[in-house]
Image (cartoon, rainbow over all chains, first blue to last red; front, side):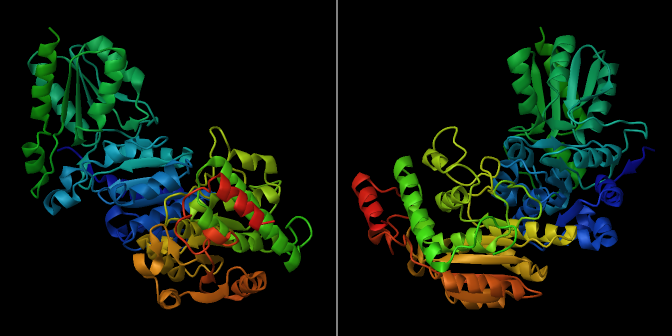
Length: 313
Length: 278
């Protein structure tokens, strides 16, 4: 039985750890403390936690003011509401002046499930990656989520961290070291590289095992820092394996596939396939059903890898 | 005159002369740049001059002084006014005013906190300054600092829903170290507030959101200085000063019209405006 753990639980607890050692950490939420798990911080540090009600724009701009005054604000809500609902506030008040605000969203992607298309953030990464100067992190499991949150607090500048709702398999041990901006080689291989992030890392590892059985040797990279992206890891994958598959719980437009393709096309063009949501909104359903319907399973990665390898010629 | 405010406290008569100088700067800056927003810069001259010459605790030679009072220009299109005041106070050389909106200038078309000494917030998209000000005011409370935060809003800006999100939050969080000022000149880009989007009953709106409201003639230095003094004394709730002003104040053909909200004077108008401001 694979151990599973919640990324937002890990986030909530990491915030409390940070709050205990750094008095400048403050937390803002928009009436979702009990879902984003900022509730732990709010309970332990009521003077430093601000539930701003259902008003994401105001919440984000207040955070900007706090950051301009030396505080380190963490702002949380669902990924459908931030950056979407408060994009202009993030752009003007945080990105342009490069203020030290940490946006941490939860319930990202299709796997929010039954709430349906309105609640499935599948374009948030395209929006946030468009903003100059933003660092964007999509952790793969609870261990990485906690470490990413702590790295974000130590980093000066605007950061977006995207977390899923459901528990995820734990893929890292206590000895894991997270380095901002560096891809993690999860498995070595010769024929193709699968570059994944978030919940798709687990699927990529499963796909690599299946492909091994067919005689296709797969490298797997966890690209948990989407921006600035680890260009040398991508170029190395292109040079050494000659084909790349990307896998993400996001639209094909403006996400991981697009970012990797930008690097590959400029440096070392090789066949590339993208496992991502095509240009469409999804619907209500169980998370597993949705992943299957919209082509985001390990099996979809296997098929994409076969295509990529075939195209190597 | 707060102890950290540089120079001697100018009298009302001196402030009146300063206001005229600031208006000349605004006209010259926008005239030279060939674009900009004279109407809403001219209407708020006395408000911003009161703050920087009499009310704020600040050190122009040390713009990032942690104990400074903060002035946040939410209506970022009035940047020429703020730049003129900052230059007159010594934040940067007066000659630099001529570079407004030029490439590589520190004086961007709308305020940019990374570019200009003394500018607290990057603005240009309306409705965000009051929220930002709440954050700045909360930080003072968290840090145990006694600086005060002032936010200048436009009246048209109050069409933005975020202003009212912030109004609700400021009262909820009891940020009594925050003072908002509305430059109520009655005209927005497309025309009169009354025709575009009614604000009235404006005072009642702020009152019902839990604010202490003071109304003044926004061109009367005595009333403005008195209002800022009274605002300091209010405990437990934020204060809004509704400053009744005239759009384009000081230049006859720019007064009470939407035509010069966002348009530079041509050569003849520029000359005429300066003549009126002699």
